[in-house]
Amino acid sequence: MIEIKLLPLVGSFAENKDEARRLRLVELVPAMEKNEEVALDFEGVDSATQSFIHALISDVIRRFGSDVLDRLYFKNCNKTVQGIINIVVTYVQEAG
Amino acid sequence: MTVIIMKIYLPNSAFLGNIDPFLRSFDPTDPSVLEVTSNPRWISIHPVVICMVAALGITVEPENIHIEKLEARSKHYLERMGLFSVLGMDSNIKIVEHEPAGRFIPLTIVKNSKEQSHVIADMIPLLHLKPQKAEPIKYVISELVRNVLEHSQSPRGAILCAQFYEKSNTIRIGIVDTGIGIKRSISASHGVTTDMEAIRLALTPGITGTTNRIGGTEENAGAGLFFIKSIACASRDFFMLYSGDAMFKLLKRGPSAKRIILNTNPFDDRHSTDPHLPYWQGTVVGIDISLDQGQEFTSLLEILRTVYSRAVSEQKKMKFKKPKFI
Image 1 (tube, rainbow over the protein chains, first blue to last red):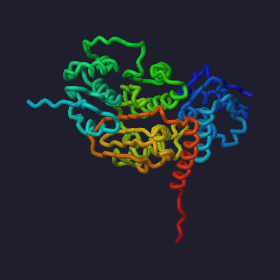
Image 2: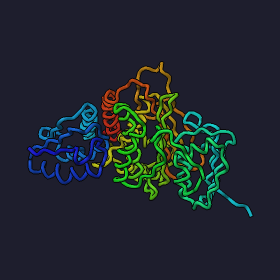
Image 3: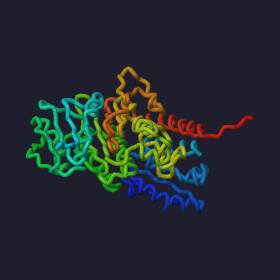
């Protein structure tokens, strides 16, 4: 499993969409294309914006389908980060 | 010869609840000269008003800005918020700092993503908030600045400032740009004819100027302003969005309104509008966030998840083709 630690990349408040986009294109999409499992480790990340999480994962779910969530893991998320991820995962699947 | 100038009058009081006369009095006739007059006795104004003056002022050469002599204490406040500095003017005022950082964020201009990250990290400690209370403030400032950087096309970036008001235990925030405005931004993907209709769409979940696809693109969900209005709604406080000639204002709700209802159509909220204001080239956002409200940010996120996904689903169904029964 590939593990990506977000804290050194985005700090304790994950709001930088440019970094989210880079992570998606350089790390997440290639890993998903190779059928790898990926864990996004949010340890030390206190909060995130919806636009950051959207830029990070929405296209991954749209491109690979919701089954991708069986091999994309969200590790060490506090309640706020979980709340934002839940919102994005729900509406991306709802919009189809 | 008649000299036409851009005029702005700072009244005795202009907060989001009573800002309408101030907005109506603003005269954007000629953007090359700015004249600022004020109530001679005292001015007490929301940060969004300071942002508007700064936004207009930075488009004008400093020698073409005329600020009428202000009452001493009010002038000190504008100096402390950094207005004269942003306008490139010397106020000749010496401020004695009572503490290293008061509970305010002075006028700050953000022009790119890197600056935004630094500003967010640096500014929140200025408000001296507990981490739990700082969450919605960080969230609101970050998303609003991001909106300006991504959608306004303004080379001058986002102009913001904020102030903590001890008596009401409220943070008041203003974020302003002089970019293309909401109507032109939304028009790229949606047919809109008025600034008010553009504002309504911008506040509707799932609608973004970057695509006509409900739910947005890989970069934009069309959620930002809806989330921010929802944070104001949960705080039972004011939120104002002004662009072009139109203004939408979410009104304050009393403590008796216990249930939080997040409407996907902003016109279903308790609100006021004005579709005939002087034309603001760009977008103005003002928001008040009460720190007294017990609503946890995480609880609000759970409500948002339900409301937002239902709205996206409904919007999508509205676009379904209907069978033709012949």
